[in-house]
Length: 532
Image (cartoon, rainbow, N blue to C red; front, top):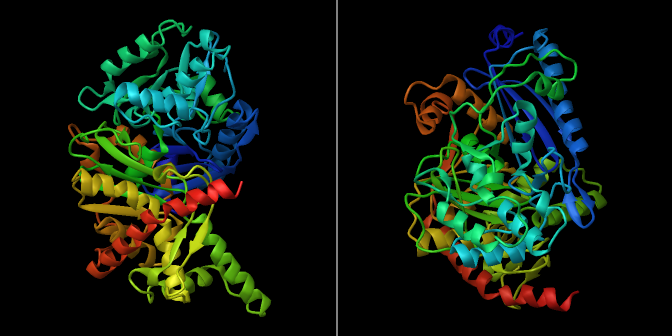
């Protein structure tokens, strides 16, 4: 038994992070040094309700209670302690979406998650108005779309928040949000760290005769920064989280944050000129900016770190799904021959083979678009593999092409920041399934963006762990200690990682592939048109 962890649990020298992902709710308990001492999770799936992707309030309640109960069970089994007190708690969730409530705190319409693209028209109109890119998944786009559609609930709106803002409100009674998530509800001013006052006025003028009962700033949650206390667990909140009655009330909570913010924390990427790439089913890159971009770009979302520094974000809907499909097919072929290959070995074998391919993939081209891809203006998923008759078609080039394609749309967006805007970038931290095979995905990403890529050997527990770190920062930060210094000196100091610098030959080869990729986009758009 780990006596240090047992003592931390018994004395409440812990922090708890709970993150609501798209398919799993994860609870991670850490000690004062941010070491993981217990975990719990709950699997869930969104539902398609009335043409809207959603989770019910009951789904949310059951899910968070189960994740917490499984974590508390883990504590009991490991340390023989019943969890009654925690040093600090923090909640995180998938980005933005739409949750609105009336004067009786009743949810007016089912929660609309980030997956819904129903507010694209409103986002485009607001982008024109603000001169600032407003993606369809942002809360303000959902609100304006509901206003434009004259939805019956609009005159009843008294409060708008996000999923983590909702659960925080339920547990503390406070209507607050961390600035990173706030920046995806409505644009924020990176100087004042509050909602942009010029854009607030523009929006209020736009909808003044549209039945919204209050000014938009009156229905949005209060913005807080990392390190600030965001309320305390009420008796009702404690029973909501832990119906057994074991958990005591009065525990402080840090500002609730989005999964983008917790990802920055979990990869030590809150410092200017640093960034992170999360690559799985989808892929996004976040780079902390030294200054604002010269203009709005539809390919780039502007959000902030948990302390309010401006971040350029390129979010692509597609990454590894098509690649996984090809790997699975090779596995199926092997099984037909009576060869049982472990899944990890199948991936390693095929990924390492890609390293033998030509730097430009031998002229091969693929698009991994299982779903639409807004960065390259492709409306529907049409995965394609294309080659000329004289292209060098072999397994090494085939795998290299599909690994390059996993970062293809991302490179299009990142090139705007890095080449057109001259954004400075010293390092990127990569995390996600594509990096599990050592060196391969990491070296190809370095070639795509032209910067060193680090993958940590000890990857923690992802966003839930990042949220626990933010809770600990609020609890244990020293006077004047910035989040950047806290992470650098007290969380990641001494942690091992593998860093790969971009190889000039790989970079040149990826540039050739990227030119072919952009030139061939009309092919995939035609496939969308022709294959209804």
